[in-house]
Image (cartoon, rainbow, N blue to C red; front, side, top):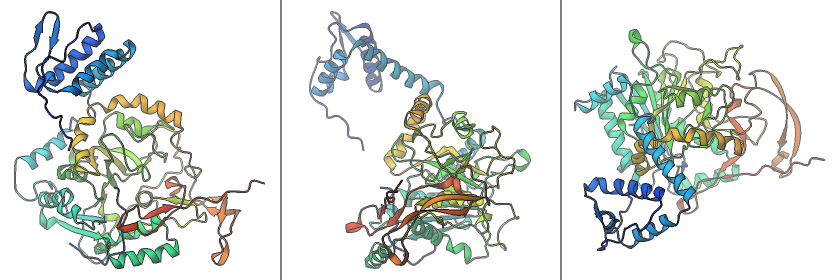
Length: 509
């Protein structure tokens, strides 16, 4: 465990109750339902009744359910509501329900683990020895940058999962580095100073993540993997699968092959969270934030691989709350592995913010790190051609995390019928115009490009103007978008800790 001087408050992402039982009897009955209503209500009754193994009663043409009749007054209103549903709506609801059930049984998504995933899971389940989840005895550097003023993360699900993961990897194989931002007086003073300087949010976040990586600069010890964690709820076994099962090599080299491999993170049981940092194989931003996440623009290769159920979906960048890296990209030359080509200009890689002539052009530090370590694009690469070269960056949809334990508990259920979303997803993308247009996505590095950008006034003046400027295109243009976010103090210790600065209106005359 390494300890670091606090920077300041890092931004963080922000039990079903059962029905009360009422003493009631024989209120759930159908006098003269339509055929479709009878089918729907009978199906609902079977679903509700199955866990209790209750029998059905038939009397004088009336239908009674011992389970439903115990639910009290709310169920009576629900029955009346169902009987008022129009015929075509009943058909639609019945069809949707049957599709969900059929999909979850016959074609579930990302539930049938590949054989090597099963082998690793069995090794973990059928033994209690330390290090049993680390099949190659690899050295893993775990890094996290947290905002945890109450201690809930360290003492709760997150801290417990970290301890389990360390046990499964083997304590001698792990170095844990946590940079925790201070929420006390020193942190508030720092934020107030930052507000006056208008520090970009991404500059701040990149520095916080780099502080968690500082021990790599201070040791000659060689690591095989770097695992970077957000404040997410995760299953330790999933972390092992991300590290050691993603994109496994052939039999003669049976080890994972990736520069980076990302989990998929969820803010609720359906909604994909990390759209800011994720780009598909051709650099397009995300579609609507539910399965299959990616659009079909260009070759649509990332989307096709998700729908095909692959464990290593090629992308240009990702994050997903939990990311495994090949450690050689983060260590100095004397401890790194064999030299490999990267798209960025230098190694060891570190998180960074854009330094751009356009103040209102920004990109996530979590996208830029992948832009720097990915394999360089070939000169003959065509963004609109199938078979585009892979970058060494992958998303693994078998591995999923969430921003609270309750959402995590639902992810094994929702994935069973998520394939049904693909048609709706495609139509929705077209209706709302996703993915958003990025004028720099197709730029070729080192080319001279002319832009019209907002130039702030000199010497702190609040007046500025739009001017035509020339710049040299970079390898990370696909990460960017228009926008500017700056750090601000958290009011009363809460709040987001940042705000968006609107772009000045442009005079078109």
